[in-house]
Image (tube, rainbow, N blue to C red; front, side, top):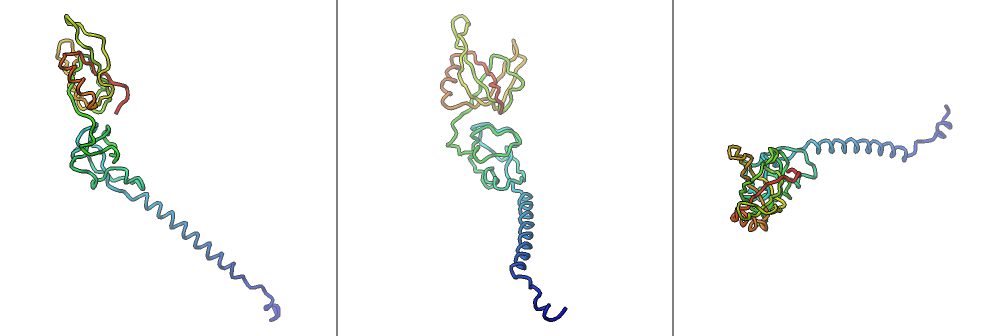
Amino acid sequence: MSAIENARAPRRAFWGDARFFLGILLVVASVAGVWLVVAAARQTVPVYAAARTIVPGQVIAADDLRIVDVALGPLADTYLSPDDLGDAAVATRTIASGELVPTASVGGADSARTTSVVVRSTVDVPASVTAGTVVEVWSAPPLERGAYDEPRILVADATVVSVTRDDSMIGGGAAALELVIPRADVAATLAAMADEAALSVVPTGTGS
């Protein structure tokens, strides 16, 4: 090839080289982005899970919880961590055993709008009724000569804390239940118990 032909050979444009290096940069950035996503997914944070069923209004103690390491990503702040638990934390809803504890389900003692009472049910309580079960309390006011009026709902939304069954009683099926009820229903419930109304605890069919 002559010197004249060499002089006429086209030279690679600079923008062609720039595209090549830009492509390399894009590949490197893509690989780095994937690596960061995978690394973030593998990062875990310590949060609380319920060691047992926690009912509304219950003061949450350390032995009610256990620490688990979970990869939550941007959702980490929505769950209770060991740094968030105060001395007077109260559950505002039922937290099932094993469930991660949302920060929205815990409030201060002054936020509690419920209280606990012990009610004896005069009818059989199903075995499925356990801590955390949502129930209704029905009341049949007493009439003369041992008769009772028609039952009516006394508490429409109560949560079971514990159940003590007494199968040895004549007639069987009686049970004493500790219930969490709204404070607005406390007066009527205590009045019904004082009047010796027949109280019945019935599951609503909506579990914890």
